[in-house]
Image (tube, rainbow over all chains, first blue to last red):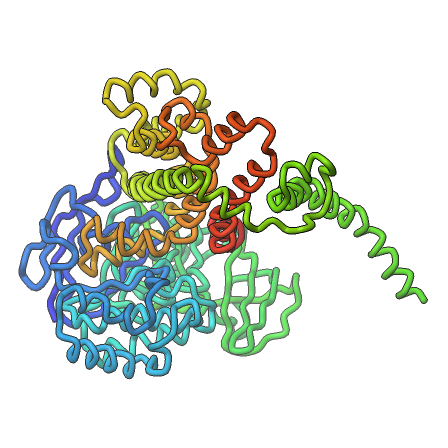
Length: 356
Length: 280
């Protein structure tokens, strides 16, 4: 296994700059997820690590060796693609053995490696089939098997679960994570699905417009988003973001449109009169005990079984609340909500940066 | 009762379609069958009753056409020219299509325009220039010259069909091949070619059929009787034996046989290649 060091890497397609001098360190044996919306440059960054895209500027090192000018096959990496990239004219065994044959590995070793990978991935009985005879999940496993047999220093995954249905995606997510725990391989995984990122990663790198917005452990990023973009992108349902102005009516608070006074914890440090965005996650709002609380009008109730999602009108803002308990609210009903004070996020309305 | 009526109505609605198919079959298959019957009858029998059934059946006419006329020479000339030209046009055309579909390079669009513009040029327009060029290159009245002309004039259609198909092969496959260690040529040869086989079969079949029947270039660029291809041979035969319709029909049947065989073997692949991408 090896670490990957991305230093000041930039990429330009003609006159369009798609990656703006990125720095990331991927520790040996870690599972790092590059996360962001379509067009943020995450796949381009992965392809540059793979050697499939040239680097306009900067340096990429794998295991301490700078690989800027090293061809993909000599980087000692393996990649799993979104479309599986299985050769349709070859059987599963040949697909998995293919890179080893090219590397002129002897037949016996190839056989051993392919059988071992097939065993790890429960593909033993499919080795004689063509890719078209397999289901989506099985094809994705073959794609992973093809990577495993190479015994690479680094695994690269380019949205490998995007073509699978929702149920299979959850299953494969667990399988990939389990595989990583067994092989302890350095892995870089690209996705736009924040749930995938949260559940699989040791470290998440959130990207937007070719820049890194935040990098860190999944729960750190969830609990302490650096800016409005990360706050809105991570978490499902998304964080409620309510614009307002810092005021002080006895205790520190944010005055939102519609005369709503949102409480702030003591020692926030935001100056009175500052325009801010008040952030609170749907599961960090609870029903107020007794009198008081924020008055909210129920708009839509969505019971999922495990929780009850309620869309409410709070002042002029629409917010979402997630209750663990089951409530039979009616549309139009007024309820009183209390935000958990230690879970409140405050962002500068101008720069979007975190204030607290 | 109601079900029966519905069934009757459904059949009635299908009637025009059935009539059209029957009519189409008669119009397209009729002349073929007529020539087939004539190929087994003597010219005298044909003149007596043009639409008669072969009786007796003159199978020996095929042997006569092959041995006594120059058909065997014409046939092998055609076979040589067409097989070589189709092989060359397939290899060169698929290489060009692969590059145009896969690589971003300066002038990509211009090169594509240049190649595909060949599709709109009528062959009559090229004849004089080709005649002069082949004369200058000492290739006039040679099978090699005809092969070169066939390759040049059929590259456009071949690239047109293949590029569309190759462009649909997912980029991930090519990236995977690069990571596996294939060179650019190996990617073309071992990934594009096998996966693009249905489209390649399509172009092989189409080019074979078109070139096997090609007359215009052959009649202008070949003069020796020993170098004539089948379509020329048949016409030549008509000229020297003006009224031997029976032998012309036999010659036509010999000429059409390879096309029927090619179509029988490759028609399924050809349809696959032509409809690729139409449905997922």
